[in-house]
Image (tube, rainbow, N blue to C red; front, top):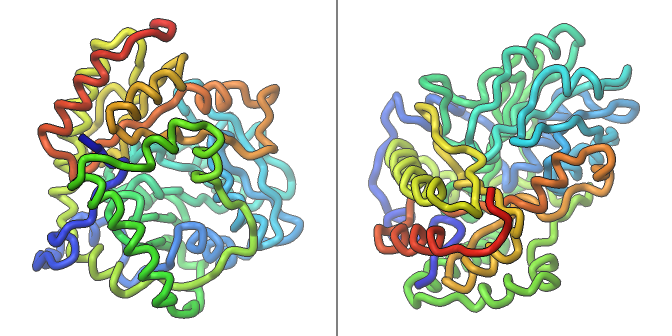
Length: 372
C-alpha cells in the first residue's frame, strides 16, 4: 500500500459540478478578485512591492522557515531578519520586538500546519511601530479560528492553495488595508508549465492506484532526498500569474468537505500517536474551525521513524530538514531541534479508511528512539 503525502488528483477534482455558495469557506476567507499567482512566493513578492518594502528595509520572519520564503524578500532588495520561535513553535510579540531594528518594515507570521497563531499582541506591536503585518497562510487554506477565517488580522495574507489541494499551481494575495494598491497583472501562466505541473500532480494518483512508489526508496537515501527536496531561495524566480484552469478547480472545491475530512483523519492518527512512547504530537487537538495541513509529530530518532514509515509506503515529510543559513543553532536552538525531530503525517482528504488504518498500525508499531 502507498500513502501519498499530498491529496491525489481524481476526476472529481477535475470535473466536479460543485457550485460555490455565497457563504462558502473560500468566499469567507479570500476576498473576491484577489490576485492569483503561480506560487505563494510570487504573492509575497507582490505584497512587499505593494507595501513599498525595498532597499534599506529588513523584513522579520520566524527562525523555523524554509529557504524559499527568503527569495521574495531579497528580490525587492530587503534584508531577511529572524525572530525566535519557541519549542512548540510559539510566536509572540516579545520575541518579535527583541528582533526589530530601526530599518524593520514588515513582519511575516505563519499559521503553521493550519493552526492559528495568536495575533492580537503582534498586530498591536506592528501598529505601534508602523510595521506591515503579513499573515503566511500557505498552510491554512479553509482554516478558521472558530468562525474567524485565518488571514484577516494582518494588513495582507498569502495563501498557497496547491499545498492543500491537488492543483497544478496557485498563490493568492489578499490585501486588507486601504493603503495597499492592487498589484499590476503579471504575464500569463505558460501552457507548458501547466502541462508539466499536471503530469507531476498525476504521479501520486498513479502510485496510489498501483500501491507502490519508486520515490519511496529514493526518499530513504538522505543525499538523494536533499536534492529532490531542494529549496530555491533565489530572488530570480519567474513572476507569472496562476492558471485559470487551476483557479477553476479551486472554485469547484467543497471547502467544508475538505476541512471535515482532514479533521477526521487528524483525530484518527492523533489517537494512535497518543499511545506511542516514541512520538509526540506537536498539536494534540484541534480547535474549532481549523483545517490541518498535516499531523506534526516529534521523534528524537527521526531518521529511524522516517525509514519505518517509508518502508511501509507512507510518504512522510519533514518541515524543514534544512533551515536558512542565517538561522544558526547558537542563536536559534529551538528551531534547530524541531528541524531534527519533526515529521508530518498526511491527513489529506484523499485518504481512505484502509490507508488510515495502515498508518495507525505503522504508528503503533514504531519501536526504538528515546521515549518522549
